[in-house]
Length: 133
Ligand code: NI
Image (cartoon, rainbow, N blue to C red; front, side, top):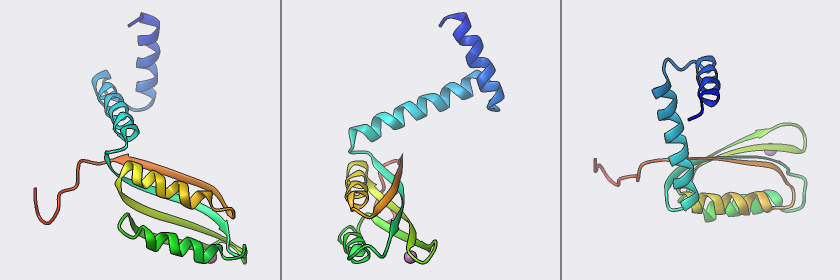
């Protein structure tokens, strides 16, 4: 690695609070590997989908509820906040295959009155069933 690049890297990781270069490199490697696993789609993952919508828009509330019931296996829980008389903020926690979570998020945020949808995905080790370790 060029010395200028390494010097800048060392300055930035020190200001980010890393005690040594190897800790920063370990986190970079994890982040890079996580991104590759998520892009491959088959990775187990957890996700947080948040969006704002106008519940006065025709049948949107019912369509959102219908879609969430359709994907009950992946949607673990939902938090609903009434921001004002017409605006709602909803946060969904999802788990499952990364590509399934992405597809559900795409369907929900494609609904017309849904604004500002954001999905955060974190890859997880494959989830074991029923007490396996
Ligand atoms: Ni509401």
